Length: 333
Image (cartoon, rainbow, N blue to C red; front, side, top):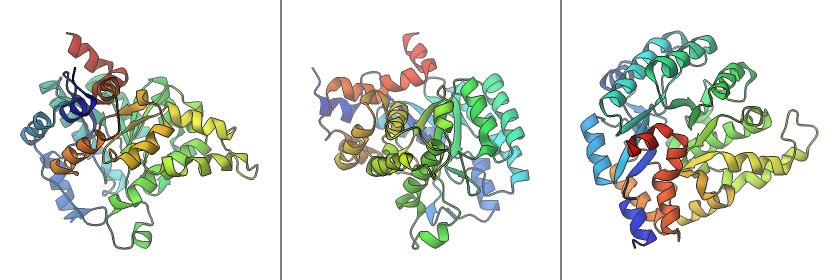
């Protein structure tokens, strides 16, 4: 029998499902360049992406399927009125890629936020015409966080569809003041993920939309370290709305899903295991913004967490198949 470390290092026999993988089709890279963006989010290089490079990386890292999406800054670098055309082009390109490689790729559709009516229309097109696997939302939309009442129709529709929602961090509106000159992914990305989840909890958006399968990136970001503090504030009547109790905060967070991109280190992973059961943990790479060397390093670190073979295989693929039954059906076919 394969031991747990080998199971993680090599992936399960059926191959990993990577729920946190990005794509940058040529027209999107050109749009970034046209906007004068040589780097993004405080100096991060814009990687070169191609289908061939993605498949080659996936084969080397035993990734059977990559669930692709736009990374930060999504289409937020454009004026709101100009986002819709690029969003549609991105979603059509993602759907074509999945159609060409249905077992190798899945896709999270982008929405032309903050335009709610246009986003609802794009969601209908994405799910009903393109057949996407879910939707991605950045952690803030031009400085407005996801628990805002303005976005309630988006969450109502996701809940009605029992859809999968992948959250992805982006720079906060005050980034230049708080970044200390360092790139956003170092500190501001995990903090902004945590900030939007607090907003979703305290606005009761998560509580009132239980059918949405929410995927939180990067091992829960700063939640494992801050969850007790966040929960304790549910006792303060001066905050309204708020969670019903401290226990409710822990209960809601335990039912979300968490990818392990950049979070396989035993210190980070130990915190995640206290936050959610193994059934809620998914594999993620964050490629190509995380270079392949970093992906391999994270996989190796994940193998140092004392997981059983069954737990390793659950993280590698089986948990994701519950979120994405299309992939489970493909494997059975």
